[in-house]
Length: 323
Image: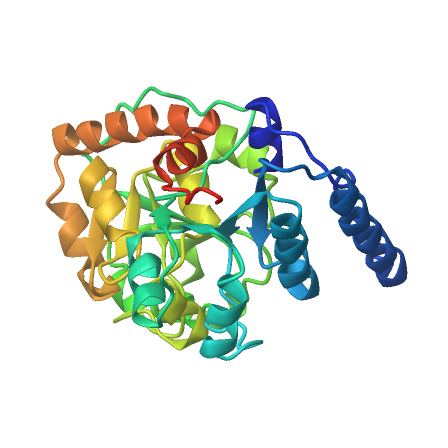
């Protein structure tokens, strides 16, 4: 997001972002960045923040308002929902210090409204995904003549995604390509149905991914998305969805996830209530239907590569005017 904003003319008024495993250094650098921002912000500015900003969010918003600036906040995660770091009233109270919100999707917007958040909001829809790597645009010659293969990227251990270890009854003709850390292949009965690639850098994955669809699923069950990670799909936009699109893979998403309206509106994948229906659903997709999905995915991938989603969100955001 910082890179996209910088390319569109926004200016970083804090310190450049860095990464460090030294917690003491990170603490003081973040504090210094906040202090620098306080001196640089000017009346009439629009300050873009990324949430959560932890302990500094309320302070930064208050300073910006005292200086005569407005604050727009892009939500990455809701602490009250996923990690339970805040109660819902605490999080709504914290968010109320900004002037407007960019939520991840319409489901998150509706949830915030239901919790009493009255701020102007617009939805991102899906994450942009920057990479200089381009995926192949041509389809395999045998598409539609063989069972489709599914790619899955992310945490592969049973604690986070137990559903992966329950898939085998659904895989009579399907195969999975797994990308990430932690897959315990000795815990599946038919390891030949899984190709475990280990961790692959995202740029390399875009160029070399194997599979015809990208699966967006989390939790303990194949029949629905459960647990904290699974339930959060109702309101979250997983980055893996955008990564799959940059790989030119149509999506398979849970039909109760926050991504469903976007997937359907852009014709970029299929929505399933249960993975038990996966094989039957894919078997009905013809080569022509797949080619249509793939063409829409390729077109959208170009938009994600240019930062178009966040730019659209900023343009449609109704900012209140200062007195």
